[in-house]
Image (tube, rainbow, N blue to C red; front, top):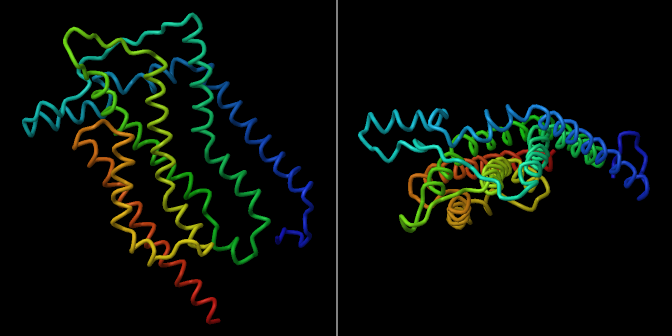
Length: 271
C-alpha cells in the first residue's frame, strides 16, 4: 500500500474510505434517477420507445440501404407495435426501475472515477502516472458501447423478436417490462463489453495476461465472442456479423495494448 501521504491505512480506515466513495456514488445515481423520473417523457418517448418506430435513425438508414441494394428485409420496424402493462402498478414500477438504470448509465463516468479514487492511493507514483486517462478512456469506451447497443443491437433485436411468430393464430402482445428489459440489458451488456481493452490493460499491468497468451488463445476468443454476440443479438447472420466485428476489433486492440505495456515493463526492468 502506498497512500499519497506515505502512511499505511488500517482496515477500518479502508472501510470508512470505501463507505464514503459508495455513498457519493449512490447519491449521484439517485440524483440522476430523480431527474430521469421527472423528465419521463424524454426518457420513454424520445429514447426507450424510439427504436421500435420507423422514424428511428437506424431503421430509416437500413430502409434507405435496402432500397438501394434492393433487399426489402433490411427495412426493419416498419410496423410499430403497442406495448401492454398487465399489472396495476406495472407502469409505475417500470418508471422507477428505468429511472434507476438511466441514473447508472449516465452516471457511469462518475462511478468509475470514484472507484479510481479509491484504488489510486494503493498505486505507486509510477503506476499512477501510467494509468492517467483511465477514467476518461473507460468512460469513452462505455459510451461507445452503449451507443452501439442502442443504435445497432436494440433495433435489430426489437424487429426480430417483436415480429417473430410461430403461427398466424398467435398474436404478439409485448409487455412493457419485457421490452424495457431487452433495451436495458442490450445497452448495458454492450457498454460493459466495450470495456475489454481496459480489462486487458489492468490484467497486463498485473502480469496476469501477456501478449503471447492473447495471441495463443485468439481462436478460442473468436468462439467466445461469437457465443457472446449470439446471446445479445437476434439469431440471424446479419446481426451476428454486425456485433462480432467490433468485438473482434476490441480484442485485437487489447493485444496491441498488452504489447506496449510489456515493452514498457521490460524497459523499466533493464533500467
